[in-house]
Structures are given as structure tokens and as C-alpha cells.
Image (cartoon, rainbow, N blue to C red; front, side, top):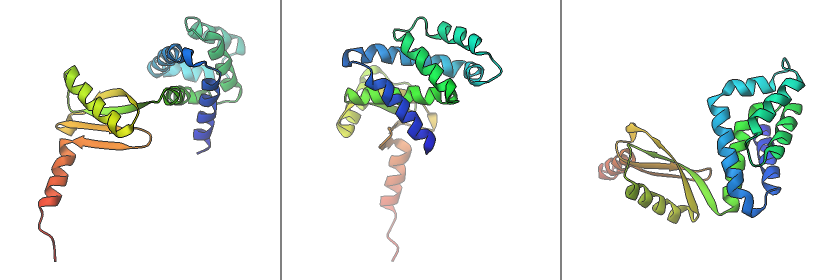
Length: 181
């Protein structure tokens, strides 16, 4: 629980220094950093260990952030996290920052599972349907799960919408069973 509060605190602090017009640029930085740290988890290990000198970490951090728009801010955040031995939470902080920025824009990241790849119009219809339920713009993080058989499964921080064929079959079977007296 304590980690979650800390993650939210760092993300909120970063979001607060952004101007509304800078959100999209910041989101691009966040995507770049998330991809880097997810694809290169050893980088997190190097930056959080005490075996690597501060000078080496400084060089590495500057190399990582030098192409980002908010490079100075990211550099300061990284050093702050290293100083407080919380760099291992960087991916979670980036994800929370992304949620925070989208929330300020009345948008929501939804993990959308589909049984298989759909054409754009079908995906757009699902997203429009979800926007009606969530009452926000939906940013879909799409993944594929053949176990769904068909339909979709959408999950946000606050709600799950299960429109999968598997779930609909369960509901159908439950309704069709005779009542036990």
C-alpha cells in the first residue's frame, strides 16, 4: 500500500509541473521511457544498485534522457528516485503518470483484450461502446487472448466490462438452468 501511495505521489508531482499544452509531448516521453525500461530491465538494476558509481549513473541517465523533450525533468526525477532507493518503481511511476495525464484530459487507458485481431471499424465500435460506459475518451491498450473465443474484455482501474463470448455463454447457461426448489 505504501508503494502505491509513493508511486501516485511522484506521478502527481510530475503531472502538476506540466502545462495542459505539454501533455501530449510528455506522453511521448513516457511511452519512450516505458518501452526502454520494459525492454531493458537490466537498466533499472544498474541504476538502482550501489555498485555503480554516481558518475557512471549520471552518464547513463543523460544518455537515456538526452533525446526526450523534458530531459532535464526526467534527469531530476531519476536522481531523486535513486537517492530515495525507489528507482525500481520507475515503470509503475510512468504508468501512473500516464493515467494522471489522461485523467486531466478526461481520458482513460483501458486494457482491451480481444480474441483475435479485428478490423479497425470493429475495434472503433468497441471503443465507442466503452466510451459510453466509462463516460470518458478511451485509450485502448489492445492485447489478444484466444481463450476469449470471441467478443472483448475491457479493464480499467475502476471497472471491468466483460463482453466476451465465454462470459455470455456462462450467463446464458445460468439463466437456462431450471430453478432448484
